[in-house]
Length: 412
Image 1 (tube, rainbow, N blue to C red):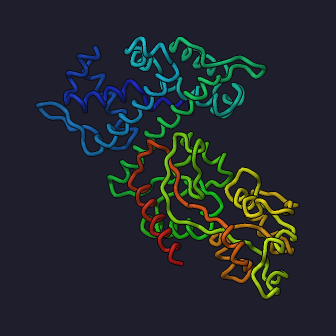
Image 2: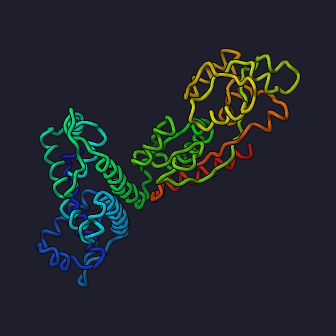
Image 3: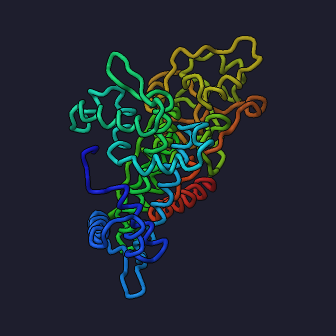
């Protein structure tokens, strides 16, 4: 919430400075504030994070293990703040090396949250409603931020001010930077042996079957107080959630090229495609592997264009004189299964996407001839993460469980 005042960027920077030089008194003198005032600031940060962050002795002040965790996360946050602001300021920041630092010193956490709120809501009225502040207060925060930056990051339209392209990019990168504070809170609990953090997973269709289920069940057996949030949807939507820091990990078929801008991947296993039908489908009674002509003569339900599985479907019939035209296109795996189960339509899915249905005798892979089998591709299943993401211990434990589950599935 924008009105939250528990954390103050200036106070956080003072704490990081104390960790750096090892003296609360020297930092107070450098910042031209009293020693009691800086002690109160540090006490407020300790209250917010629920941990003792500094040890004080005659020779100075040193960070506790909890303080080191927070210091490291603050360094990452500041680095991301600075890089995002340098990009927004463009040539001006290159002409004046101190410009970014001077701007950051004057920017408040409330202003940063106001920019993020406006970027996420799309209008000042909706942003004010979601954050329980008045449009006037939100407008003042936005105007003050723009004045500090000295360049336009907002444009005015029918719904009031909204971030322009520069403002939206800045909001996105600052939102990711602020996620470091949440990571710090989780790591401080982990430091006390309390694996109670939140794991935010974005899941493409395959991962909602055996892979993700196995990994989550195993993780929660070891850490029953952990919280797991799973979001599903299209790759386009989920990758934007990942870039915005709304989730930590994206699990499913890997992409390449421009789809991975700002992201990195880890491969888990190859997943072969198959032609899928209900058990009583006529192709099972033919007594031979289906040829392209047999498959083209059937009705199909296909994934929507632009997905790897649709590309594999189209490639299967590439160069064929009479390729089938799918009568149904859907991105819903649940709907695809339901249509195939209740009709003679075919679908291209991966073998592991129907692992449970195949085990229960609900769906089967259609046997195909050798030439067709050579045309069927595989896809690579893996993890997609932000380039600069640093997992907490809980998140690292989940990555271990995912790799373990993937290795087991590769042997299935």
